[in-house]
Length: 88
Image (cartoon, rainbow, N blue to C red; front, side):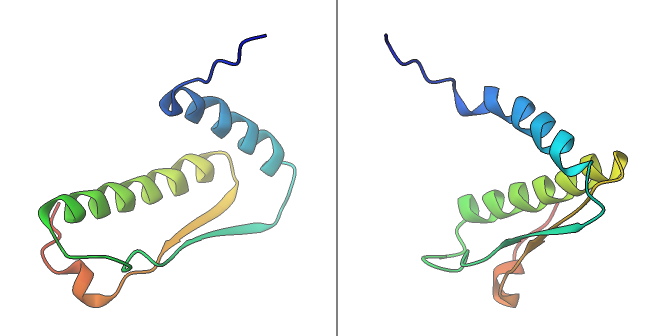
């Protein structure tokens, strides 16, 4: 038996489907809190782009689950200075 791992990007869709199935049976609110992003943060262009990607993803997660009536709220905690230089 040889173990083969799927690339991460191929697991996102099935994971979302499983979560929607499980969470759709609940009336609870779910908060996904993302913190400690300031550890090692140097405010480089690459890090700014990564933060923008994370914020877009958080918005997308909220929208996707809200369409199904599932109350999932991603919360990204950032220091004010981390927002400097971010533009979309």
